[in-house]
Length: 185
Image (cartoon, rainbow, N blue to C red):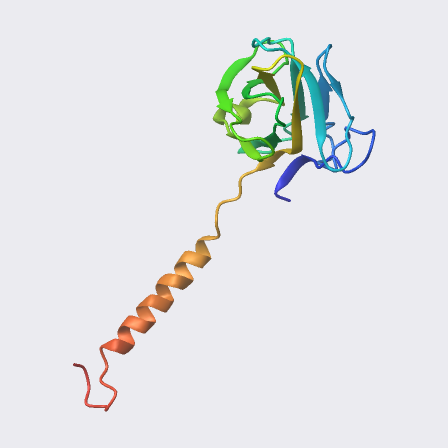
């Protein structure tokens, strides 16, 4: 299993993850003052973000790590014409003491999906990981999430590279043998 917790927002009126590791009890919470379509049609649309950055206006996703290492957090976000223009991501182990992570991610184009997130080494030491998205720059604006997940980043299979090298060496060695059978060139 490469995933830990995945929200695809495909079930109307539910913020329950579509996939969740047993014991993770993952959740999404909207700060007071924000409203949402809770979700619908594969997206979570949240509106009511202020023009000026306000830490109390946020969307928090959290999960229990359940002994998984190298977890990362990833989300897809987009804005409409009047939507949020800037997003900050912060993380916390307790939902109280927050650490700045991604500051000032600009959603420049309207109706374009942007991938936010990545892996933080500190996640490996946390039992519970909280990530909050803070949107701002347009009063009352909305922000749409097309998916969120806490997931293990899987490296490429080392065998793929090894097979490529073996193939290259095989092709190279054939070059050194003359096709007429006279031996090495």
